[in-house]
Image (cartoon, rainbow, N blue to C red; front, side, top):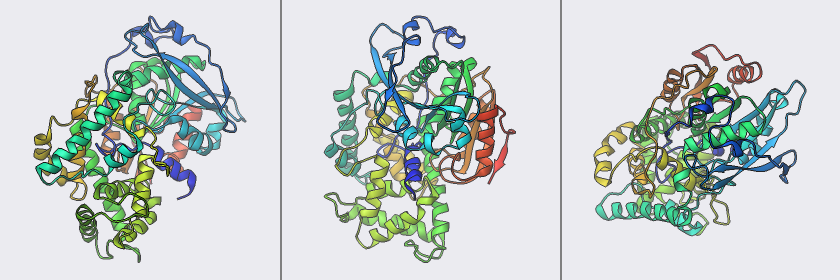
Amino acid sequence: MDTRRLLRTFAIGIGTAGLLISGCSSSGSSPNASATGTAAPEGLSSYYTQKLSWRDCGVEGFECTTMKAPKDYDKPDGGDIDLAVSRKKATGPGKRIGSLLVNPGGPGGSAIGYLQGYAALGYPAPVRARYDMVAIDPRGVARSEPVECLTGAEMDAYTQVDQTPEDDAEVRKLTAAFEKFAAGCEKRSGEILPYVSTVDTARDMDVLRALLGDEKLHYVGASYGTFLGATYADLFPKRAGRLVLDGAMDPSLKAVDMNRDQTAGFEGAFQSFAADCVKQPDCPLGTTNTADAATALKQLFTDLDAKPIPTGDDRELTESLATTGVIAAMYDEAAWPQLREALEGAQRSDGSGLLSLADSYYEREPSGKYANLMFANAAVNCLDLPPAFDGPDAVEKAVPDFEKASPVFGRGFAWASLNCTYWPTKATGTPHRTEAKGAAPIVVVGTTRDPATPYKWSEALAEQLSSGTLLTYEGDGHTAYGRGSDCIDTAINTYLLEGTPPTDAKKCT
């Protein structure tokens, strides 16, 4: 994979369950009704009228600033939170349309990192010509008062915990890992944990819209970013401009249903990988059929569970890290050759390839330092939805359904869904339909074999939104815009530049 595509692949919404990344989320209450007009919501005038002081970012072509938002929108006099913002101004030619906010998903992905590493450089030139490309790191993420939970060494240990416990002792070890993670978040970031919901971030986006001088918010969100965008449209329908929601979430689902759907999504992605792999002369999972490939992968995981292998690092490749490495490569078919090589290496007792994929997924630096992606991910998800399970017994009962969804990944995904059970802050959101009545046309993009955001979620969100239009990419990988389909890109570019959405139910291959 080339560097820019690698940046894009691991930046865009990586919402799997639990020890990997917990399932994406839902919302809470609406702001004051006056927020749907042009005036600032009651009590928030000072935030909506603050002056932004732009400065050089140290990255060529980009400006940066910091804006203030109330830590608690229900008590706006209770203190501020500082949020990092970056932009790259429209390049021309053509009349500037306004600002285009982007979010790569997660939750927990750095929108500024995505902007500076991909969107403001890799989005189609006509779009960059007529929009200021803008990103705000959501509260609790990256440059915006990041949630912190574990040290690098503690995180290394956490990512190696067995996610497929087979006896009571292993269950206790796994639940202890979840408890330690949650306790670390509370100790290091307890003051911010109650205030990092998707609703809070959507309201921050409206403050930024006003400060940028835009009457309406134009936005491209991927994966979890679709839920953030849909939440914004639901809260501020009259301020929703041209919204592209790519690789959509279904806000009406409970956490357990989301996690089980994702389990099936990754199984489907693996089946696509396996079907391609067995046609290759270098396929390490055999060259006969996908069923044998699945059996071979499960055997590798079983062998690693019994005996981890060296990686050339001070960490061994465990079953959990190997599973994460495989999952990481499911997001983009361009990573399949890398996965074949990594699997072949693992069969030779060289775990370095799969470890490298897992480290990219977790945003672990060679120094052993982790970005706060995983910490923010749990903080947002555990606030946005009640936990999937109330304890280990409930997981055990659900394992058969998860294994039915994915014989390869099911057991691990079921147990990983237990992470929010031990969260120190009670969830404020609930599953609900998101309709955004009164909003302008919103384009929802779904990929038929998307592992992380199953296609039926895009169908569901497009149906829920009163002005939703579904655009379908028939293919593999996570999200569709900018992945090489001229049909998809042309439809979205036309919408962003002219305001004309594609015909509902349009399909691209």
